[in-house]
Length: 72
Image 1 (spheres, rainbow, N blue to C red):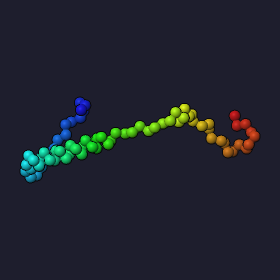
Image 2 (cartoon, one colour):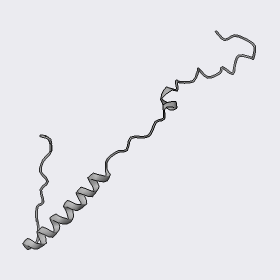
Image 3 (tube, rainbow, N blue to C red):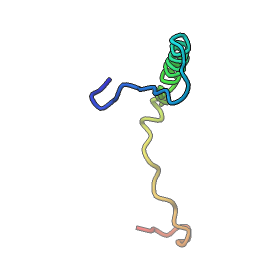
Image 4 (tube, rainbow, N blue to C red):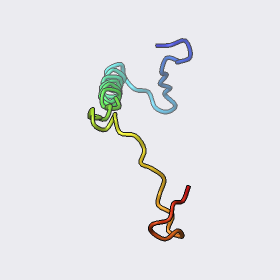
């Protein structure tokens, strides 16, 4: 954990759960958290060498200038 992260807290606001119930709750929540964090890893997209070497295309053709005239 980094210094900015807090330790997760679970606060019981109603009822009186037994130690076994709390242990089951922590096991389920911990497992769900571990699965979610494992699946949350972003995959880097595969970029081929061809795609990496491509440069932007030239400026779009100007449609207001007829063929055969230099647009400068």
